[in-house]
Image 1 (tube, rainbow, N blue to C red):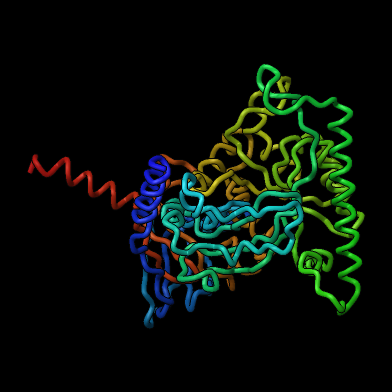
Image 2: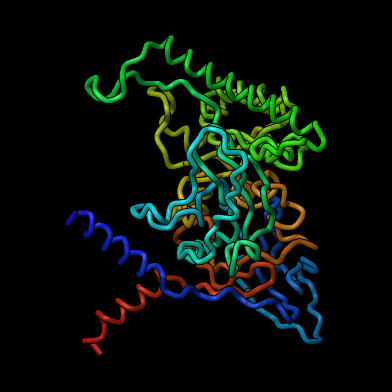
Length: 436
């Protein structure tokens, strides 16, 4: 009981610490703004030197080289020698669905059960989280909060990271359904023969085939349900799959080995779906197959060890470059939520292993917007799109020079303060106080 009470007290204290008032979301843009003199990284591979960006009412009016700025009632930001980038997009993350890993009450990214197609991450997205403010300081301005667990996990949505509530945050709700392809474990038993009961390779393979059969049955029933028109009895799980079969919602399938990727793609094709493959560790081995089937990929964790003993030890660093250079649409992603602040530096790593820097930028901007179905409104700095971008003093893909000085989300000049900066200032003041 004493241990329980101490644990409860610790959890309560942690929650109180994180329950401090957040930085208020920025107010709506009211005046036309012009950014001049900057190097504009459009996000589609194009770079505009000495660029001028004009935006009003949250939308980009024009992007030009050496552009003229109207003199009437326009606020000018001189960014000579600086860089402007589209807001980075954190794909397939549990950002906003978890706050403190050690406090169960703050974890809301996974539900019980194998088939949870009716789960919508957007309604659980927490705009009061302390984490998004730290991401904005590195240029991550949008995200795709994604449910996890089970075989079919549920629907993700695309959000911008400066909002009062999830309704304000949502750029696109229910953009993709997420599922994991059933795989055969590579181990038989735990360390020293203890832990998980031993199973023969045949038994493991049989269990995997049973899971695939169950998944196939679920999709077949859901597709039949979607073709019924107005069913007499509503099945929430099947009802949530309708947009997947109609093409309004993407299907993201997590698969890593080449065998599993091929099986997942062929499975989706049987139901008239072109999936997006996430994970994709061995996708570089089947490039031609992926191109033939027009498959986009969300490649995860460039900073990782290879899966197999005989793999190139640097393959995780190279994977995204190999796939993108082959002409595939590649999105870069990393696990977790607070870790997303390192997303631009993961893209920087990919440039060191064979990918052009502007193409690497596209993996966390326009390419991500494409697979989420929001590329017509965001993902690049182009006329008519949302004015969601930031000004950096240097190269934003390099942690040594990434210095975000000003950021805009849908034209709103957002506050770049965060808890980390506040603590840094507090203790910097503390340890210099005696020297004054």
